[in-house]
Picture (cartoon, rainbow, N blue to C red):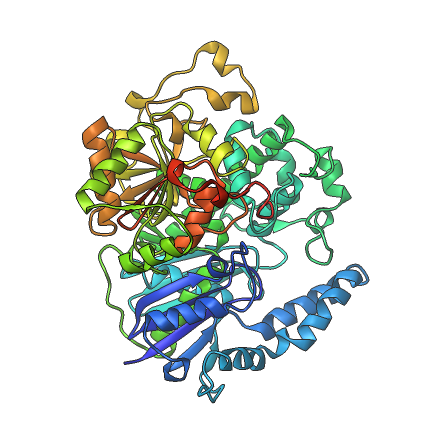
Length: 611
């Protein structure tokens, strides 16, 4: 038996993964254990979990691999500062002490951290380093259902690369082309995340969610910042940015071009200007991704595409690539960001370095992304008792039936079942569920449960066999990474008066038979659910369909704004008691909010940092 521990850490979204004989056994992000969103620290808890799940001590693990190469990253930092000198001295002076003390000697740092897991762990000879973008590409290709694929990876920056094209064939994967820092689609998108007042490396999906409320009137101005070639390659004009050497993303030239300073989220509201900016950068991002996809399809002639890197979480752009029918098949790594680098680094070591054969799974090899913690019924009941929760344990059939009834009565439900998801999306393991037919569900969930901006969209989970009846989509979307339009026969057309509304005024117009998951442009971020990946969730949606005729549920992650997705029964109960969720369904236990002791109520409105 051969085992590999993969680690990503020290930037954002630290994570750990374990492979045994090339099979993915367990993977989790550190944030779920520490309750600190996007936690970048050494993933001590995640490593402890994956080792325990695999029933291994660290001294029994054959190889440990880190997801990037620190020396190359340091080289990029030094060359960047030299290239831009004397600008950037302040950020250079801030960065250097940490690099010299820790990051440059990462093998030593990792060895010292790893020893804390197991005093019998003796040697650093089994520690390896992968390339950042190779880790991303490997995470996308090796678990995919394809024998052969083009792999497009786009993110902020790894060591030098920001965008790469790789070709995967059977057990092999080779990077063919790279775009290098400071030219980065991820950093371009993050610059606009920063400019509209959202948090970089966290709020990019808010920018994407805001885009449909605006008009892309700043598209041409953005193209003054980024020179896009016919093949999708691009260069960013550094006169407008500050991320290469400064402490902010943009500079005064950028502000002057668009006519405003960056929005201060503490005291400035989102206006039509910010919505139009969001619409514009989203459109440019889609254009770049579509051009890249078309050019690599024509150059390599391969019909399958795999996507990874933070930009691959832009499900609207992914949906546009699908819509254009550039490739026959697309597969996107559900943990496309840096967390997935832990998995990719391990897979790259197994297949590329060790030359091990791939066994291709016709669905994929991610087990529905249910790779995290799980709790037995006994563990759930014991934990709930210890925190003073009042619950009832009922049979499986009763649980499914009762939950479907509650959902049809427009109750907001915390749903905690099976293994936790790996990656940023809740997929029916750690989810908040609601009735998509409800006019008020989106607003209520955002304001009363998630404590976040009212414009933020929710995703529909739909039975795979009913997908094409409700959405203009014919392919699997198990990881909620593709956006599709609602079918025209389910739409409710807007009146002329409604069409003239601006921005956030559009929010409360009923657009379809499932308004809670229909975005203002009639699109939805779809998750397809099958019996073989998540039987319990599938049975619940099927029962809801039996009762209502609707095979769709609202699915959003089980957390409040700024909080990581819940990991344990205690996390779930705390979130339940700190929000206006009506019921918590956890294993075979059902908890009614009205039956809980009032002293257990929590104030979650100020509990977590804004995301």
